[in-house]
Length: 96
Image (tube, rainbow, N blue to C red):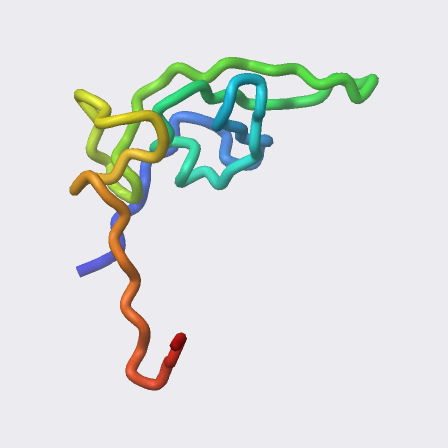
């Protein structure tokens, strides 16, 4: 079984930002950007290096899936089971 190829409705090479707090924008990865329930924008620059902000209002996907979110649970990254999965340490890793 191969790894799922995620759909991107935007140019992943652009500066992708989400608004975590009012007027507080943070740059994020393309995976977080496509799954973030909240204000999203793509930033580009003109020839004079002035920023151009484009609001992004396309489908919202569950994190690391191609399943579109019908009803978001809350603001922030949307996970298919409602919460982020916990990573399991390898048998030789000890974080205590």
